[in-house]
Image (cartoon, rainbow, N blue to C red; front, side, top):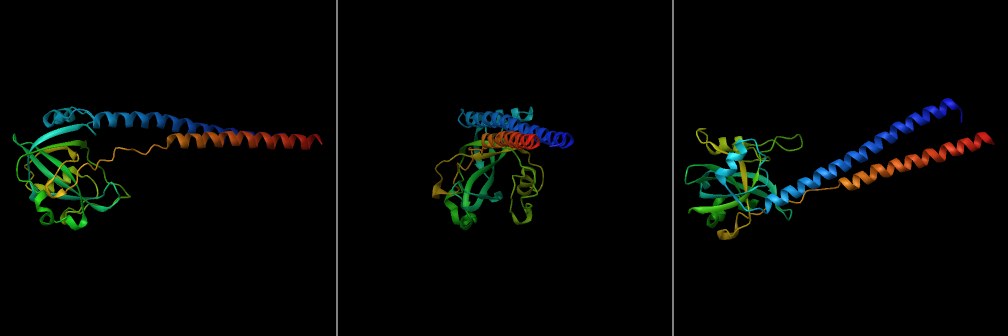
Length: 242
C-alpha cells in the first residue's frame, strides 16, 4: 500500500474509532444517570406520603416533585372529570379518569383516579365509583407533559386528552378561570373503589434501561474496527513485501 493511501485510511479509521468510543462512553454515562433516576423514583414511590400542602410548597420553591407520594383528603367534583387516553398496565385501551379533588381548606388538585375501559368512560356506567363522601387519596406526583410531534393534539371540546395538559384540563374543568389548582397531578395508588372502577395503581415505575447493551455494542464495533484495520494493513504490508 502506498503511503498517501495508508495515511488517508488511518485518518478515517481513527475518526471512526473516536466516534465509536465516544458513543460507548456516552452510553455508560447515560447508564449511570438512568440507574440513579430509577433508584430515586423507587425511593420516592415507597416513602411515607407527605401532605398536599407540603408538596405544593416544595413545588413552588422549584423542587422536582415527580413520583413523590402525597396524601390528600377532600371531595371529588365528578361532574368535571376529564379523560386521558391511555393503555392499562396489561395493554388494554381506555382512559384515565382525571377528576378535581377539593380539600377542606379549598385547595384543588387534579387526581388521575385510574383506568377505565372505553365501555366504562360514561360515568353512569360506573355510578358506584362516583364517591360523594370525603375521601383520602394517596398518589404519586406526575408533572404536566409537553406536546410532541408523535402524539395527537388534545381535543378539549370533545374531552379527549392525549397528554397531561394541566392548564388545559384546569380550564376545561373550571371555565371561569377563577379556580387555582395544584401545579401537578396526583396519580392515585391502587385502592378499593365501589364497583371496581376507576382502577388505580397505573403508574409505570419500571423505566426502560438498555444503555449497557448500547454501550457494549458501540465499544464492540470499535474493537471490530481495530481488528479489521489491523488485518487490512498487515495484509497490504505483506503484499507490498511480496
